[in-house]
Amino acid sequence: MLDATAPGSSATAPQQVTEVPFEVEFTASDDGSGVSETRLHYRFNGGSWQSFGSAKTGTSGSFEFTAPEGEGTYDFYTMCTDLAGNVETAPTSPDTTTIYHVPAPDISVQTNALNFGQVTIGEEKTETLTITNIGDAALTITDVSADDSAFSVAIGGGLPASVKPGDSIDADVTFAPGTVKKFSADLLIASNDPDTPTLIVALTGEGVPGELTLEVTANSDTFVFGDTLQVNLNVENTGEPATVDLYLVLTYDQNGPEERNWSASFLSLIHISEPTRPLYISYAVFCLK
Image (cartoon, rainbow, N blue to C red):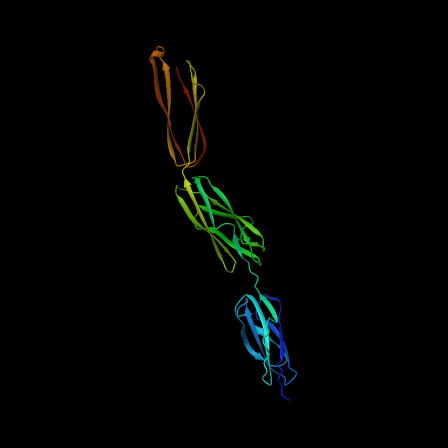
């Protein structure tokens, strides 16, 4: 009896896998001459169909699929041939579909650059960089550092730091310039992100001179014989070192307002370091003896 009827087959596979290889099972049948072989076909991410591996004999079995295109979506169908040479027609839709995905961390920051602007020498400015794990496995941050000592980083809890999927951690980046110039550096964030093991954030800032503030006060502006002049000097410097010459200038009437005279006395030479806390200096000058 002539066998003119094509055989049939179907494939089944898990909906999602996280490792390879995995099994694609098949069943095949033929009511005439019997099943000769079954072949597996696949397509990746909706692309063109391709044959995979060698044909299998028997009416059931499995193919060990290695996901040759890497992570993504794989559609499958099988085609069977019977002993009379009749070949199953390819289906119009896949028998089964499997998504292959390995969970992994994925690091993200809210900005790829931090600009601290102008910061006075001796002072500092801190900006917060938020690091987020947008992946689906734990992110481990092993190191966060800048390649210029003018910038420093602090992370609460220290390192290494583990960040769950969807969570964030803050890094406080501080700019403390020691010289008057423009600074440019890289902040390097090392982690177990397989695609971006080192994330780079650009850092910029400018160190600018501070100010020298002098506040001079006296206990009075008019004196008579026997009075004591108290001179108070309040100094604060946030800039470069400075030297201040302090003089006392007295104006007095010798023979009435028409013969007004003045004298200048050198009190002190003050060296103001960089930077200094407010410095309070007081001089007592006995005058008009």
